[in-house]
Amino acid sequence: MALRSSMPNGNGIYRKEESSLASYIEGPVLVAGSSSFQISLESLLIGHEDWVYSVVWQPPLVASTKGDAYYQPQSILSASMDKTMMIWQPEKTSGVWMNVVTVGELSHCALGFYGGHWSPNGDSILAHGYGGSFHLWKNVGDDNWLTQKVPSGHFASVTDIAWGRSGDYIISASHDQTTRIYAPWKVDASLQDGEFWYEIARPQVHGHDINCMTVVHSKGNHRFVGGADEKVARVFEAPLSFLKTLSNATLQKSCYSDDDLTNVQILGANMSALGLSQKPIYAQ
Image 1: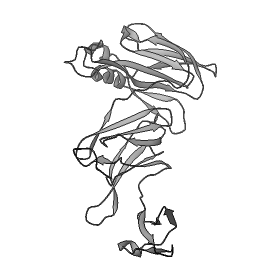
Image 2: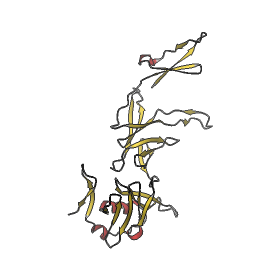
Image 3: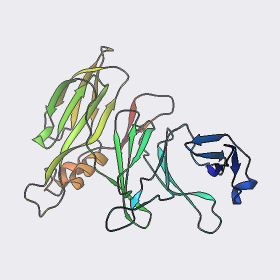
Image 4: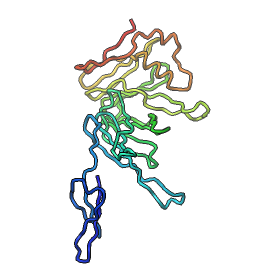
């Protein structure tokens, strides 16, 4: 979007102040007080593969130590249902707007982003997703954005909750049609009270409200059973990939020994193109 201003003469008639933007197609004129502004199309940003739900300018930054002057960074953040957010900036020599940063989620549980937001100083970006989830990235270098841990939880009533085997995580069921797993995450080994609980997995994303669940307690077992409105009880088993993630995600010593992990026969899960249930991938 390009702006051209004009000022009124003595007769109250507005006169255009020609600028380098005169070659653009003329658009509507907006009048604000004693000035008018003409809007023209400057760029067409192409990159997303689904609906774009949010476009936000980076907030102004302080330009002086006194805090009385600000400047507007030339950065735009867009969020889309294609599960990505993009940062757009003009190229320094040509001025053409380019996609300089792309972040997003690959999980099938992330059904797209409804909006994106900048932090006040512009070093972090936050997206909120279709299922009520938050997704946060922080700039740790020159256009190097790393994902960060964010608070999360159910957005409907919780119907059941149970401790996992050995008591190292909690599973909860809810009328938001999901079951979620929470586990402690110690941010820094040097911190005495640095342990926090985060959502680390959603083993069940269902099409019906989930009313109950229970953990199957036995040696070498990592299963739970969930019941929903469609009157079917479904059994879920943790694959080896999840147990390794749980073991490596925390700085504290894992309760799973190498022998326990070796005995797990399910490596992961695969969702078919026309199915709603994940199929196990076995080691043998």
